[in-house]
Amino acid sequence: MNPATERLGFEINALLSASRALTERSAAAFHQDLQPAAFHIARWLYAYGPAKPSAVAEAVAMDRSSTSALLKRMASLDLTQSGRAPEDGRSVLVSLTPSGRTQVERALALRQDELEQRVEDWPASDLDALVSLLHRFNRSQQP
Image (cartoon, rainbow, N blue to C red; front, side, top):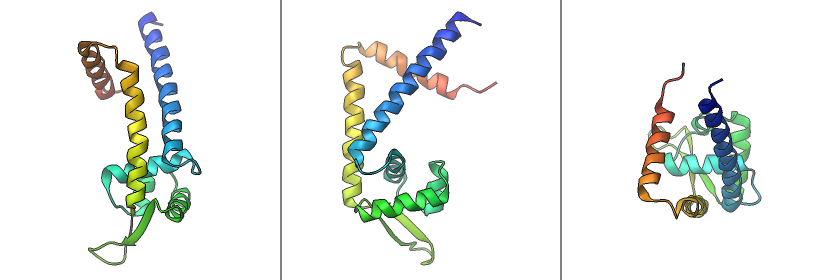
């Protein structure tokens, strides 16, 4: 095994662990009474807007029944709402309520603050290099 790729694997694992922990904290900031998967749904709706529940489930890689249950729970907390699709009047679309948008923004601000704290002492050139390398890594083709 190449020692450099072994070290890369170790650092990627550390990054993924830190990312999961940050996601858990962000999800709790979104709403402490909901499981983290609800934050993934809310963050997707925040980024992409109203959608059919089935499209949301597919986008966040959850089964439809779990997504539906979470959307109902989120609606009961005034975080999401449902309405008819304007183009056909039959399809149901879910979206964030103003309160839901505010909660997502609060959770995303927490994430951003933590990232900024981690790199606040870094020279801009180091941060640019890391971003560039991560972009390259994320876009590389799998074997």
